[in-house]
Image (tube, rainbow, N blue to C red; front, side, top):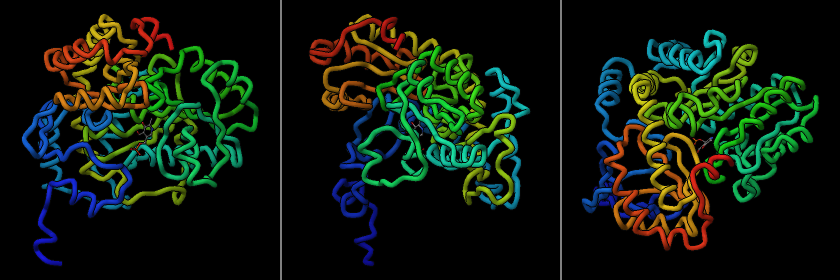
Length: 406
Ligand SMILES: Cc1ncc(COP(=O)(O)O)c(C=O)c1O
């Protein structure tokens, strides 16, 4: 290939010439980031309220992450899973301690590291097969658990699933209500997958009574309760787990914010669930790689000092938006805002230098870096005030209290 053809290019035309069209046309070509801001190739600065979709917990170019990854790279960047490494063991221990804080007996938990959220859920699905071979698998309507074939089989949106059917497993979707769960359960259920706040559905928290019923029905029927904390975990909601203090799971899955931007996920089994895999049952070349684990250790260390800040800043932001008349959902810094036309609102905000996300046609989703301050977020509040009339045109107007009850 000629040197010309290989020359790096930032243009979107070059993207289209080289990349599969799996994501549509990207909105911008981003070249660098710092704190809560990213810069596009034309030099424009953007306030990033999406944070790589709840990934960049420490924002961009955080010194703790740079130091951890750089020094690990100089020491040991990868070994196979025939060998253990100190960052990997440290990270598993840290996750156990997080579980202690959230009401589990962390010492009873066992960790399997992956590279992504969908893989963490794949591991969980395989564990449910070992737990109750041939058992039915339940998931909630509106949930999103990933795009690989197994995780896709428990992802509710038909448009994502149907082109790829038949999918493995025999997953069924249940409304997140006490009555629907009672109707769906039986002794043949192997597992129920729950996303404690359904992000794609519009940042919709699952009610506490539904989580309690889920636990009760899993216990009564010998099923595993799998709580997917891929988007909601690791401080996103102002505590380590969005399900923390609400329900205890048999299996927890993590990814996104865990590595602060370096790809890593984890499937954590508690008690017997953590002992389902025997040698040969599952594997991964990269999962638990020391570079990713070092990034995750630095992320967890930093996030441990940010939990109060996330709760406070999220409450402030949701309060400001509610005062402007928006119906607001979510916890901590995972926020859904009801608008008449989310893709339209997203575009207008982007043109004003603010990155948000249209989770669905009527929900703007925010998942900014956890270290975002009220001062940094203020321009967004001002933009939402300026556009309140048009953004709310026919959206339901409501306060924070009514919205959080969903
Ligand atoms: C709740 C949830 N589970 C699983 C996934 C899949 O994670 P990944 O994209 O890392 O495979 C996502 C991604 O958006 C998610 O939000």
